[in-house]
Amino acid sequence: MMNTPTPDEARAALQDVERRRTQTAAAAGQPLWGWIVGGVLLAAYGVLADREPQFVRTWGSVIILLLLFVALVGNTRLGGSLLRRPVRPRVTPDPANLIGLLLVLAVLVVGTTIAAAMEVPHVALWSGLVSGVLVAVAGPWWQRRILTRGTGR
Image 1: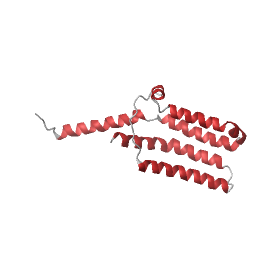
Image 2: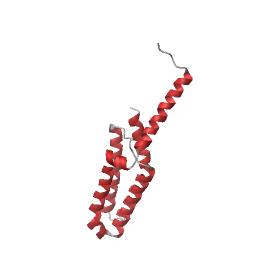
Image 3: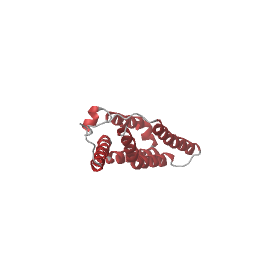
Image 4: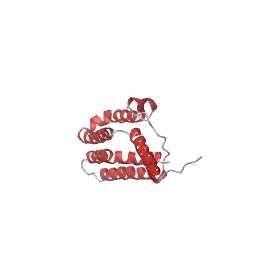
């Protein structure tokens, strides 16, 4: 026999579903300090590339590969457990999100290339600072948007 829930019970159930969806997205995401550290590292790399170009020519690719390795390991089961992120929902890529991300990256790369071609002083410094601030400020918002959409499907 099926009982029809009252409007209050239905509202409470929907609120509970939304609360759990938000909890899942929050547990799966990188912590805020991770985004801020990533932004600071990008900005510091830009400053270092501007102030010490020889150091970046020598060690720049090693630094980039190390940071890429850390980012990739953080998205594995073992890395997620080491970072205390046991929950990882499967998010199917949305073409609109990928296009938006690629558009932002293209604007940054093209803008930096044009500024370098025009011989604007301190291009590496400014591109590093803009990229770092973008990661630190927009990264958590973008992640929350992707994860809440992914858990809603």
